[in-house]
Length: 342
Image 1 (tube, rainbow, N blue to C red):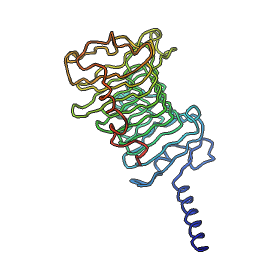
Image 2 (tube, rainbow, N blue to C red):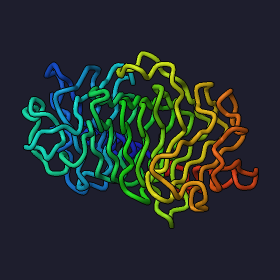
Image 3 (cartoon, helix red, strand yellow):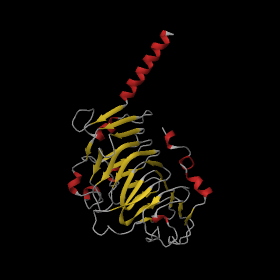
Protein backbone atom coordinates (compact mmCIF):
# COMPACT_ATOMS: atom_id res chain seq x y z
CA UNK A 1 0.00 0.00 0.00
CA UNK A 2 2.84 2.37 0.96
CA UNK A 3 4.60 1.53 -2.31
CA UNK A 4 1.47 2.39 -4.32
CA UNK A 5 1.18 5.67 -2.44
CA UNK A 6 4.76 6.68 -3.30
CA UNK A 7 4.23 5.61 -6.91
CA UNK A 8 1.19 7.89 -6.98
CA UNK A 9 3.20 10.81 -5.57
CA UNK A 10 5.99 10.21 -8.10
CA UNK A 11 3.50 10.07 -10.96
CA UNK A 12 1.84 13.28 -9.79
CA UNK A 13 5.21 15.03 -9.46
CA UNK A 14 6.22 13.87 -12.92
CA UNK A 15 2.98 15.22 -14.35
CA UNK A 16 3.69 18.60 -12.79
CA UNK A 17 7.19 18.64 -14.26
CA UNK A 18 5.91 17.64 -17.67
CA UNK A 19 3.25 20.33 -17.51
CA UNK A 20 5.90 22.89 -16.56
CA UNK A 21 8.04 21.77 -19.51
CA UNK A 22 5.10 22.55 -21.78
CA UNK A 23 4.79 26.14 -20.56
CA UNK A 24 6.83 29.07 -21.87
CA UNK A 25 6.74 32.54 -20.32
CA UNK A 26 7.23 35.79 -22.22
CA UNK A 27 8.16 39.06 -20.50
CA UNK A 28 9.56 42.24 -21.97
CA UNK A 29 11.95 42.88 -19.07
CA UNK A 30 13.97 39.72 -19.65
CA UNK A 31 12.79 38.02 -16.48
CA UNK A 32 11.21 35.05 -18.28
CA UNK A 33 12.02 32.45 -20.92
CA UNK A 34 11.59 34.86 -23.83
CA UNK A 35 11.35 38.56 -24.56
CA UNK A 36 9.91 37.90 -28.02
CA UNK A 37 6.47 36.35 -28.42
CA UNK A 38 7.33 35.06 -31.88
CA UNK A 39 10.44 33.39 -30.50
CA UNK A 40 8.31 31.58 -27.92
CA UNK A 41 5.92 30.43 -30.64
CA UNK A 42 8.83 29.21 -32.78
CA UNK A 43 10.23 27.26 -29.83
CA UNK A 44 7.16 25.01 -29.68
CA UNK A 45 8.02 21.67 -31.34
CA UNK A 46 6.55 21.18 -34.80
CA UNK A 47 3.41 19.03 -35.05
CA UNK A 48 3.19 18.48 -31.31
CA UNK A 49 0.18 16.53 -30.10
CA UNK A 50 0.61 18.05 -26.63
CA UNK A 51 -0.67 21.51 -25.74
CA UNK A 52 1.93 24.20 -25.14
CA UNK A 53 0.87 27.25 -23.16
CA UNK A 54 2.67 30.55 -23.68
CA UNK A 55 2.08 32.81 -20.68
CA UNK A 56 2.43 36.47 -21.71
CA UNK A 57 3.20 38.86 -18.89
CA UNK A 58 1.39 42.19 -18.75
CA UNK A 59 2.68 44.79 -21.19
CA UNK A 60 2.33 46.24 -24.68
CA UNK A 61 3.84 43.92 -27.31
CA UNK A 62 3.91 46.05 -30.46
CA UNK A 63 7.21 45.31 -32.21
CA UNK A 64 6.29 42.04 -34.00
CA UNK A 65 3.86 41.01 -36.66
CA UNK A 66 3.05 37.51 -35.47
CA UNK A 67 2.21 34.17 -37.01
CA UNK A 68 1.46 30.68 -35.69
CA UNK A 69 2.32 28.45 -38.63
CA UNK A 70 0.31 25.34 -39.51
CA UNK A 71 3.10 23.18 -38.07
CA UNK A 72 2.45 24.61 -34.56
CA UNK A 73 -0.96 23.22 -33.49
CA UNK A 74 -2.24 23.07 -29.91
CA UNK A 75 -0.83 26.40 -28.72
CA UNK A 76 -2.48 28.52 -26.03
CA UNK A 77 -1.60 32.21 -25.75
CA UNK A 78 -2.63 33.33 -22.26
CA UNK A 79 -2.32 36.87 -20.98
CA UNK A 80 -2.53 38.37 -17.51
CA UNK A 81 -5.76 40.22 -18.28
CA UNK A 82 -7.48 41.44 -21.42
CA UNK A 83 -6.57 45.06 -20.60
CA UNK A 84 -3.06 44.27 -19.31
CA UNK A 85 -1.53 41.97 -21.95
CA UNK A 86 -1.82 43.77 -25.28
CA UNK A 87 -0.57 42.37 -28.59
CA UNK A 88 -0.53 45.25 -31.04
CA UNK A 89 0.67 46.26 -34.47
CA UNK A 90 0.12 49.13 -36.88
CA UNK A 91 -0.32 47.81 -40.41
CA UNK A 92 -2.62 48.27 -43.35
CA UNK A 93 -2.74 47.45 -47.06
CA UNK A 94 -0.49 50.27 -48.17
CA UNK A 95 1.49 51.16 -51.28
CA UNK A 96 4.89 49.69 -50.44
CA UNK A 97 6.23 47.68 -53.43
CA UNK A 98 8.59 45.67 -51.22
CA UNK A 99 5.63 44.08 -49.50
CA UNK A 100 3.25 43.70 -52.45
CA UNK A 101 1.12 46.52 -51.15
CA UNK A 102 0.65 45.21 -47.63
CA UNK A 103 2.23 47.94 -45.50
CA UNK A 104 4.13 51.24 -45.77
CA UNK A 105 7.92 51.28 -46.06
CA UNK A 106 8.54 52.63 -42.57
CA UNK A 107 6.89 49.56 -41.03
CA UNK A 108 8.70 47.03 -43.18
CA UNK A 109 11.86 47.29 -41.09
CA UNK A 110 10.09 46.12 -37.91
CA UNK A 111 9.67 42.45 -38.79
CA UNK A 112 11.39 39.67 -40.70
CA UNK A 113 10.07 38.58 -44.06
CA UNK A 114 7.66 35.64 -44.09
CA UNK A 115 5.53 34.98 -47.20
CA UNK A 116 2.49 34.02 -45.14
CA UNK A 117 2.74 37.18 -43.06
CA UNK A 118 2.61 39.36 -46.15
CA UNK A 119 -0.66 37.83 -47.35
CA UNK A 120 -2.84 39.86 -44.98
CA UNK A 121 -2.36 42.97 -42.90
CA UNK A 122 -3.02 41.13 -39.63
CA UNK A 123 -1.33 41.71 -36.31
CA UNK A 124 -1.66 37.95 -35.64
CA UNK A 125 -2.10 35.20 -38.24
CA UNK A 126 -3.31 31.80 -37.00
CA UNK A 127 -2.57 29.04 -39.50
CA UNK A 128 -2.52 26.14 -37.01
CA UNK A 129 -5.39 24.06 -35.64
CA UNK A 130 -6.52 24.02 -32.00
CA UNK A 131 -5.18 27.43 -31.01
CA UNK A 132 -6.57 29.19 -27.92
CA UNK A 133 -6.25 32.83 -26.88
CA UNK A 134 -7.24 33.85 -23.36
CA UNK A 135 -7.24 37.04 -21.24
CA UNK A 136 -5.52 39.37 -23.68
CA UNK A 137 -5.99 42.00 -26.38
CA UNK A 138 -5.07 41.72 -30.05
CA UNK A 139 -5.33 45.01 -31.91
CA UNK A 140 -4.40 46.77 -35.12
CA UNK A 141 -3.96 50.50 -34.55
CA UNK A 142 -3.73 51.56 -38.21
CA UNK A 143 -7.23 53.09 -38.11
CA UNK A 144 -9.06 54.07 -41.32
CA UNK A 145 -6.10 53.72 -43.70
CA UNK A 146 -7.50 50.57 -45.37
CA UNK A 147 -7.63 46.86 -44.56
CA UNK A 148 -6.02 46.54 -41.11
CA UNK A 149 -6.73 43.19 -39.48
CA UNK A 150 -6.24 42.27 -35.86
CA UNK A 151 -6.42 38.52 -36.57
CA UNK A 152 -6.45 36.28 -39.62
CA UNK A 153 -7.75 32.78 -38.85
CA UNK A 154 -7.00 29.89 -41.20
CA UNK A 155 -6.82 27.00 -38.75
CA UNK A 156 -9.62 24.88 -37.35
CA UNK A 157 -11.08 24.78 -33.81
CA UNK A 158 -9.77 28.16 -32.71
CA UNK A 159 -11.04 29.58 -29.39
CA UNK A 160 -10.95 33.16 -28.11
CA UNK A 161 -11.95 33.52 -24.46
CA UNK A 162 -12.10 36.82 -22.56
CA UNK A 163 -10.25 38.72 -25.29
CA UNK A 164 -10.42 42.18 -26.86
CA UNK A 165 -10.14 42.15 -30.66
CA UNK A 166 -9.79 45.75 -31.77
CA UNK A 167 -9.56 47.39 -35.17
CA UNK A 168 -11.39 49.57 -37.66
CA UNK A 169 -11.63 47.83 -41.04
CA UNK A 170 -11.60 44.01 -41.30
CA UNK A 171 -10.78 43.34 -37.63
CA UNK A 172 -11.42 39.56 -37.82
CA UNK A 173 -10.85 37.57 -41.00
CA UNK A 174 -12.09 33.98 -40.84
CA UNK A 175 -10.35 33.12 -44.05
CA UNK A 176 -10.97 29.44 -44.69
CA UNK A 177 -14.39 27.99 -45.48
CA UNK A 178 -15.51 25.22 -43.15
CA UNK A 179 -13.06 26.07 -40.34
CA UNK A 180 -14.54 26.57 -36.86
CA UNK A 181 -13.87 29.49 -34.51
CA UNK A 182 -15.54 30.09 -31.13
CA UNK A 183 -15.58 33.44 -29.31
CA UNK A 184 -16.73 33.59 -25.69
CA UNK A 185 -16.96 36.75 -23.54
CA UNK A 186 -14.98 38.81 -26.04
CA UNK A 187 -15.12 42.45 -27.13
CA UNK A 188 -14.91 43.01 -30.89
CA UNK A 189 -14.50 46.58 -32.19
CA UNK A 190 -14.58 47.87 -35.76
CA UNK A 191 -16.38 49.84 -38.40
CA UNK A 192 -16.10 48.39 -41.93
CA UNK A 193 -16.74 44.70 -42.67
CA UNK A 194 -14.97 43.97 -39.43
CA UNK A 195 -16.12 40.36 -39.09
CA UNK A 196 -15.69 38.75 -42.49
CA UNK A 197 -14.70 35.67 -44.46
CA UNK A 198 -15.89 32.18 -45.29
CA UNK A 199 -15.32 30.40 -41.97
CA UNK A 200 -17.85 29.41 -39.31
CA UNK A 201 -17.70 31.79 -36.36
CA UNK A 202 -19.80 31.44 -33.20
CA UNK A 203 -19.91 34.50 -30.92
CA UNK A 204 -21.32 33.74 -27.45
CA UNK A 205 -21.80 36.38 -24.76
CA UNK A 206 -19.68 38.86 -26.73
CA UNK A 207 -19.89 42.63 -27.15
CA UNK A 208 -19.87 43.68 -30.80
CA UNK A 209 -19.07 47.40 -30.77
CA UNK A 210 -19.39 49.47 -33.96
CA UNK A 211 -18.26 52.88 -35.06
CA UNK A 212 -20.95 54.60 -37.11
CA UNK A 213 -21.40 54.50 -40.86
CA UNK A 214 -20.26 50.97 -41.58
CA UNK A 215 -21.15 47.28 -41.59
CA UNK A 216 -20.40 44.62 -39.02
CA UNK A 217 -20.27 41.50 -41.19
CA UNK A 218 -19.18 40.72 -44.73
CA UNK A 219 -19.69 36.95 -45.00
CA UNK A 220 -18.41 34.94 -47.96
CA UNK A 221 -20.02 31.67 -46.93
CA UNK A 222 -19.80 28.86 -49.48
CA UNK A 223 -23.10 27.59 -50.84
CA UNK A 224 -22.73 24.07 -49.40
CA UNK A 225 -21.78 25.35 -45.93
CA UNK A 226 -24.85 25.34 -43.62
CA UNK A 227 -23.54 27.98 -41.18
CA UNK A 228 -21.61 31.24 -41.35
CA UNK A 229 -21.52 33.69 -38.45
CA UNK A 230 -23.73 33.13 -35.39
CA UNK A 231 -24.21 35.66 -32.59
CA UNK A 232 -25.83 34.22 -29.47
CA UNK A 233 -26.65 36.28 -26.39
CA UNK A 234 -24.40 39.10 -27.57
CA UNK A 235 -24.61 42.87 -27.09
CA UNK A 236 -24.40 45.09 -30.16
CA UNK A 237 -23.23 48.50 -28.97
CA UNK A 238 -22.34 51.86 -30.50
CA UNK A 239 -18.87 53.38 -30.25
CA UNK A 240 -18.15 57.11 -30.46
CA UNK A 241 -14.87 59.01 -30.89
CA UNK A 242 -14.17 57.22 -34.15
CA UNK A 243 -10.69 57.65 -35.63
CA UNK A 244 -12.39 58.81 -38.84
CA UNK A 245 -14.21 62.12 -38.99
CA UNK A 246 -17.88 61.80 -39.88
CA UNK A 247 -18.53 58.37 -38.36
CA UNK A 248 -19.98 59.61 -35.08
CA UNK A 249 -23.75 59.94 -35.23
CA UNK A 250 -24.16 57.66 -38.25
CA UNK A 251 -26.08 54.36 -37.97
CA UNK A 252 -24.37 51.03 -38.53
CA UNK A 253 -25.61 48.02 -40.50
CA UNK A 254 -25.57 44.39 -39.46
CA UNK A 255 -23.72 43.55 -42.65
CA UNK A 256 -23.55 43.24 -46.41
CA UNK A 257 -23.03 40.14 -48.55
CA UNK A 258 -19.46 39.87 -49.73
CA UNK A 259 -20.14 36.90 -52.02
CA UNK A 260 -23.26 35.07 -53.14
CA UNK A 261 -24.18 32.89 -50.16
CA UNK A 262 -23.86 34.89 -46.93
CA UNK A 263 -25.14 33.29 -43.73
CA UNK A 264 -25.52 35.31 -40.52
CA UNK A 265 -27.80 34.54 -37.57
CA UNK A 266 -28.39 36.76 -34.53
CA UNK A 267 -30.20 35.13 -31.61
CA UNK A 268 -31.31 36.33 -28.17
CA UNK A 269 -29.06 39.37 -28.39
CA UNK A 270 -29.46 43.05 -27.54
CA UNK A 271 -29.18 45.51 -30.43
CA UNK A 272 -28.57 49.20 -29.77
CA UNK A 273 -30.77 51.94 -31.22
CA UNK A 274 -28.06 52.93 -33.74
CA UNK A 275 -28.64 49.81 -35.87
CA UNK A 276 -29.87 50.91 -39.30
CA UNK A 277 -33.59 50.01 -39.48
CA UNK A 278 -32.99 48.17 -42.78
CA UNK A 279 -30.43 45.95 -41.05
CA UNK A 280 -28.59 45.02 -44.22
CA UNK A 281 -27.59 47.56 -46.87
CA UNK A 282 -27.04 46.84 -50.58
CA UNK A 283 -23.51 46.98 -51.96
CA UNK A 284 -22.87 45.97 -55.59
CA UNK A 285 -25.03 42.87 -55.19
CA UNK A 286 -27.97 42.83 -57.63
CA UNK A 287 -28.78 39.23 -56.66
CA UNK A 288 -29.50 40.12 -53.03
CA UNK A 289 -33.23 40.96 -53.15
CA UNK A 290 -34.34 37.70 -54.75
CA UNK A 291 -31.67 35.10 -53.93
CA UNK A 292 -32.84 32.31 -51.57
CA UNK A 293 -29.17 31.53 -50.94
CA UNK A 294 -28.90 34.48 -48.56
CA UNK A 295 -29.55 33.23 -45.01
CA UNK A 296 -29.80 36.35 -42.83
CA UNK A 297 -31.77 35.40 -39.73
CA UNK A 298 -32.82 36.96 -36.44
CA UNK A 299 -34.52 35.39 -33.43
CA UNK A 300 -35.92 36.85 -30.21
CA UNK A 301 -33.56 39.80 -30.04
CA UNK A 302 -34.24 42.86 -27.90
CA UNK A 303 -33.33 46.53 -27.80
CA UNK A 304 -34.41 49.35 -30.12
CA UNK A 305 -32.30 47.99 -32.97
CA UNK A 306 -34.06 44.61 -32.88
CA UNK A 307 -37.26 45.91 -34.48
CA UNK A 308 -37.58 44.06 -37.81
CA UNK A 309 -40.53 45.97 -39.24
CA UNK A 310 -38.32 48.13 -41.48
CA UNK A 311 -35.75 45.52 -42.43
CA UNK A 312 -34.80 45.43 -46.10
CA UNK A 313 -37.21 43.20 -48.02
CA UNK A 314 -34.87 40.50 -49.25
CA UNK A 315 -36.12 36.96 -49.70
CA UNK A 316 -33.36 35.52 -47.56
CA UNK A 317 -33.82 37.86 -44.57
CA UNK A 318 -36.37 36.80 -41.94
CA UNK A 319 -37.05 35.80 -38.36
CA UNK A 320 -36.45 32.19 -37.35
CA UNK A 321 -39.04 29.91 -35.80
CA UNK A 322 -38.40 28.35 -32.41
CA UNK A 323 -37.70 24.99 -34.09
CA UNK A 324 -35.21 26.56 -36.50
CA UNK A 325 -33.45 28.47 -33.72
CA UNK A 326 -32.74 25.16 -31.94
CA UNK A 327 -30.33 24.31 -34.76
CA UNK A 328 -28.00 27.15 -33.77
CA UNK A 329 -26.47 25.79 -30.56
CA UNK A 330 -22.68 25.22 -30.50
CA UNK A 331 -23.29 21.48 -30.25
CA UNK A 332 -25.28 21.46 -33.49
CA UNK A 333 -23.16 23.97 -35.39
CA UNK A 334 -19.82 22.37 -34.47
CA UNK A 335 -20.89 18.79 -33.80
CA UNK A 336 -19.81 19.13 -30.16
CA UNK A 337 -19.31 21.94 -27.68
CA UNK A 338 -15.97 23.76 -28.09
CA UNK A 339 -15.07 22.91 -24.47
CA UNK A 340 -14.50 19.38 -25.81
CA UNK A 341 -12.04 20.51 -28.45
CA UNK A 342 -8.48 19.46 -27.65
